[in-house]
Image 1: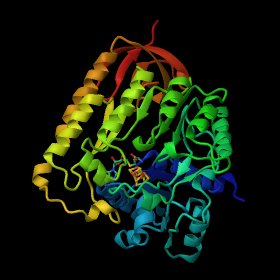
Image 2: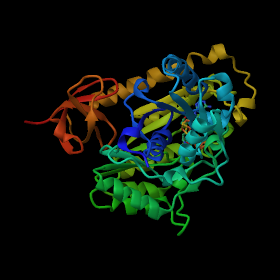
Image 3: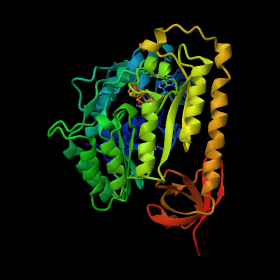
Amino acid sequence: MHGMSDLGKVYVRTFGCQMNVYDTEKIYAFLQDRYVPAASEEEADLIILNTCSIREKAEQKVYSLLGRIKPLKETNPGILVGVGGCVAQQEGEKIMKRSPLVDLVFGTHNLDELPALLDERIHSGKKVCRVIGDSDSVPTAEAPRVPGRAGPASLLTIMKGCDNWCSYCVVPLVRGREISRPAGRILDEASDLIQRGVRELTLLGQNVNSYRDPGSGSGFVELLRKIDALPGLKRLRFVTSHPKDFSRELACAMAELPRVCEHIHLPVQAGSDTVLTAMRRGYSASRYLEKVRLLRSLIPEVEFTTDIIVGFPGETRQDFQRTLELIREVRYQNAFSFRFSPRPGTAASEMDDPVKDSEKKSWLPELQAVQNLITAEKHQDMVGRVVEILVEGFDRKRSGLLEGRTRTNYIVHFQGDPSLVGQIVTVRVTRSRSIHLEGEMPV
Ligand code: SAH
Ligand code: SF4
Ligand code: F3S
């Protein structure tokens, strides 16, 4: 056993999606017998990079951060550097070849082995790489959590992996087959989080609509109903919904269940059916729009967000124009849009692309300009309204202001007492900014 004084400090830098944010909490938990969380890389004895490989840029960020860590390790050679996450799962030992300061590489299915891997590194004096397939591991989600790290809004993984094999995507390669967690475990974790002060839960999975309780076989809507009924919970969200599996039943449940928020992230990827087929998304633009209309008819105030890929192999100007039409029709609150990035091991990375780069270059900024205008108009529409927000914490840039979110996913900054963190308050929106709103509490 270690005494308190023996504990080192660990800092985990998180890249990529909310899956990684959740895994980072699990990494802290697996290491809690030996390390306490540090506030930054500079303070840490152990630095871990929890990486993302969804696009080439995400991967490059990992190497540029390693470059910035180098001087820290030169000053203090005792610092250990570990690389985990999706780049580790895909690249394995290659990471150590490219960046010799890395002591340890571990895959997405090896988080539970971290303490043992660190021992091996320390006692053998050799670099350690452990990346396995997803069949024989303790699912990450079953790890404990470090108490006190959950804020008022918390993530909760309900399934791991993905079986959809969209032609551009590395997730099935780096996260493995789709496996749902037992509903009982999810409910226990949810109750535990609520007991620790969590007021809002976001259920996580690459495709939550295909959740199936391994015991009873019951589906996502049933799970949603059970969590919605937990005493003490104020709000419930879930991400990501694959449009092909988004059912009428789920739309009705969203309308009916009191805690489920009026916001849905529904990644469309493209507005052209030719491109959607090449992406293997399993829906057409018109089927997608039907689901949007259904949701709007059941929940008039519902807000949509989405993901879009621009410049898929073979995408023409006409195809791209379909995407512009679609975003104008849906009027998303926000769209996360990316230039297509060929990823190793995916089908799309082998596809020919007769459309010139020089032609496609302007499309992403063009789309973003259209979306920014829609976002600005929507924010402007909120001014003057009285909204209910869950206060999640403090605004990072303008100290002193509190930050919260409406049920419909608008971010609001306002002046208030720090004791309000974790509470649901009523605020009048006074001003619109590009990515958030400003408000004030009525006196
Ligand atoms: N499971 C979710 C999203 C996972 S990845 C879904 O099905 O939508 C998050 C987003 O990254 C995707 O929605 C997509 O828009 C984008 N993305 C994934 N692979 C990409 C690639 N190769 N190039 C550019 N963007 C990509
Ligand atoms: Fe990737 Fe498609 Fe799975 Fe989403 S559904 S994670 S885009 S393969
Ligand atoms: Fe990135 Fe892995 Fe998530 S590739 S987007 S961190 S599942």
